Length: 182
Image 1 (tube, one colour):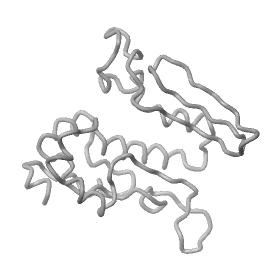
Image 2 (tube, rainbow, N blue to C red):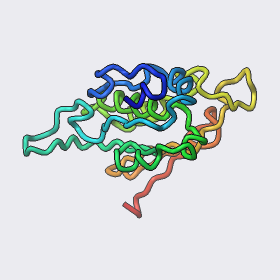
Image 3 (spheres, one colour):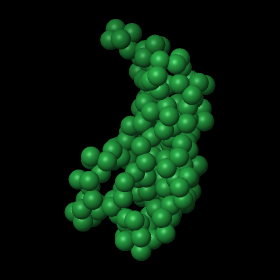
Image 4 (cartoon, one colour):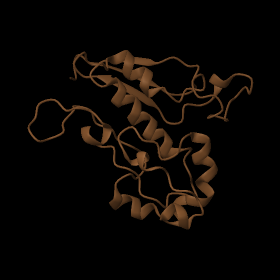
């Protein structure tokens, strides 16, 4: 009903199923932002059932060992606070699509995620992989000159290794080992 109030067709029912996409592409979400903004409830993709992962064991708890978090409000309680004109003034780029796509990738790789796979998944928005998503390049003819907004970090606690990428997409990863700390 919230999509209809915004003058948009509602997403298909499959959008709320494991592996679903509320918006079929980042371009579509960005195009619809001026109409819907953050005034809808996001599907919860916070546990094994919601991600479509078969959990280890059968204790009645869907614990896959995988935790998906977001930097925008996805739980209904927090989503209500975002359903304001003020919160919609500062849109992130295709936040729901990013979250849904990341959930899909993690669910597909579940059980086989090693350090390199994690690094590959976390960089799914690289300008080399999603052309056109980033437009803040230093050199327009070089997509990898776009800034990494924030930072990306991958941690292997067992191996006591952490890698972080910041700066620009063409920059390398900073690797530190943590033998004295972990």
